[in-house]
Amino acid sequence: MSRVPILSLASVEKVYKTGHHALKGVSLEVHQGELFALLGPNGAGKTTLIGIVTGLVKKTSGTVLVSGIDIDRDPARARAHVGLVPQELSTDMFETVWDTLCFSRGLFGKPKNPEKLEEILRDLSLYDKKNAKIMTLSGGMKRRVLIAKALCHEPSLLFLDEPTAGVDVELRRDMWKVVDRLRRGGMTIVLTTHYIEEAEQMADRVGVIHGGQIVLVEETSTLMKKLGQKKLFVELEEPLLALPEALASAGVELAAGGLKLIYTYDAKAEKAPLEPILRALDEAKVTLKDLQTKQSSLEEIFLNLLKGTNQS
Ligand SMILES: Nc1ncnc2c1ncn2[C@@H]1O[C@H](COP(=O)(O)OP(=O)(O)O)[C@@H](O)[C@H]1O
Ligand SMILES: [Mg+2]
Image 1: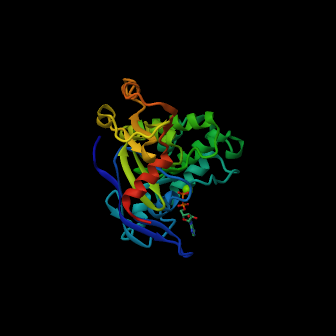
Image 2: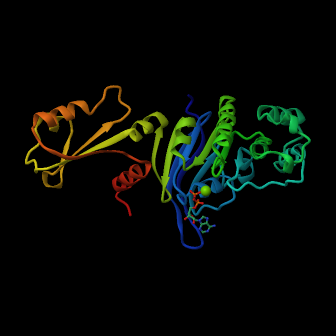
């Protein structure tokens, strides 16, 4: 994958008039042709970040470049490089699909290009519905019209703000297919989501945002490995004063004054990672009171990351 930056944010801050500090020193790069998922809980600052890049929200400070164009220096030209499918679905229901696209393209001062619009409709399997009024379309097709609308001025970067929030499973899979096809067509895509599964299925890289801070940016495969971590908790009848060598060298930790053992392992590993631990426990002749395993959640990863950043 090429590493040509299409979007660069440097130290972006946003403080709303209410005094709410929605973005705290956000720096981020999105590369040409990648699908980047911005993952974070409600209120993390995802829509604020998109709003800043698309000119809907005024940043407090920092720098944003879109295709190398500074949004402060040349906002109109920078904006023309960006397509946005907003979180709130809103479009004129009484218009036809075709008129909506022509109007949207016109807003960006682009010359008419019916062939291009037809190509976009075909790519989104909407060509048959060209002359249909939007209100007559199914929910899935309405969403595709919004994508078509966001693409019709030929942007180089497409934002999808929570494209599958509040939709059923079938529609979600349909959206994934549409987005995947766009990506394979070479479009650079940033989508926001609070579904870890969505990021896992689709994204090349994932950025985790929490409390207005980017707490992690990783290749999706690396992040999923971290998410695959599980913890084994072993409660003992009698406190263990020292860990047997076999357990210590495997990374087992002693807690609760020797009454608890904690072992972190990769649940997705090929070999069953618990076997040697259980064997060592058996050999140590300890009496088990209880045994429990727990999947590390995104929430826990957030918390651990935040602890690591040493900020409030
Ligand atoms: N116009 C606004 N005025 C004041 N606070 C806002 C405004 N828009 C969003 N916020 C606050 O900023 C934070 C981030 O919001 P948002 O960017 O919408 O988060 P997300 O999209 O990740 O759910 C939230 O706490 C939200 O209440
Ligand atoms: Mg949002």
